[in-house]
Length: 455
Image (cartoon, rainbow, N blue to C red; front, side, top):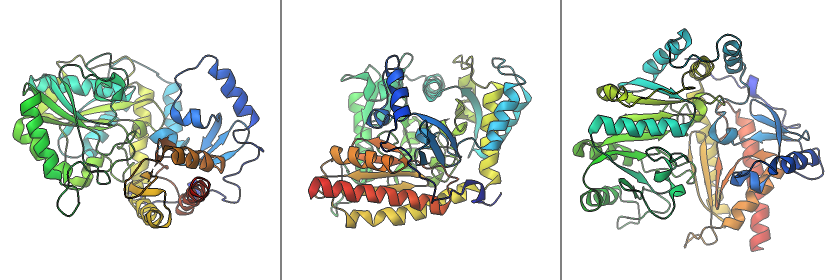
């Protein structure tokens, strides 16, 4: 295991961030966005709030089309976990872009090396793998695997978890808000523990995990046909606002599923590959899911994802027509293998945990210093800040969320909004001083926003 070296990722903080145009976004960004908007629709909320056009990136820095340079606290929305254009990853992709781009699901040496690396690295008996080109495809394959392995057809998922958008097959979108007001048959949604906004509490006001499990049990008995194949869940909600579970939840959920013959399916497209300081987030609680999906940081920007299955259920993968046209192509395998190697060689799991300590300490001060900061949370380099109008009532403050996001962006911090919740996913290669500079920018934006909105 290597040791983290900040030198390759250090920025001159007298030069970055650097805003060189009088208005941000600048004229070239506005021009490119305007031209694209004639044809490209359905933009994300972060782009609509701040329509900048990016030109390049290196490590923890991004540069827009006008030459403005930003500290990256978004990682391309949780993707470039190892920073932009890491030389080892870029070179690995380039090698196979010149050698062999695709050969369906035939074996290649680079694929075999990746499979062996995953088998040696992932916890427990997660030894069966299939590779895809997007998170939705991996999750869909996981759902089919759960059905084939159990002979059951129903699924539980959680409100505000995110599992994909297509919905054209079994139903990734059916497990998120995108399916509309009704749930298709066989797909059910239940609440998940949120320590800041708990549904059920003990007498002292703390979240009561047992009450959630009691609800799940009653729900299965009363609202399903008792044919639940899997409980599908994000270990930490990303799109829903960096919602962290209490530490006793996943061990108890693992036991709950085992006692009822339900598979535990962890969707770690967002939380895997060191984002939270572990290869899988579930490792924080010593839990091994039956099925798990990896993505985003799995290829550090190259579109490659993975479904991993425990050995007892490996035969089910053979029964679902699991292969895809693009999954496991040599470029994808080279990118993913390089990511595993970089994390190991550079000691990045330990560094992500170190950054967590810095972020957690810094943000904890804000809940007492600022009226609009209701809660902060952090696991590795997955962070969230919840803004509220009233701390006692915990009333969401969407206007403040938009203002803080835009102000920080104009000051040179690229990051991710979610209404009144602000999300951060800095690369896990980020040096301490760059991380704290990002925190400085966010705090300045909070101070200015609070003054403008509350006086």
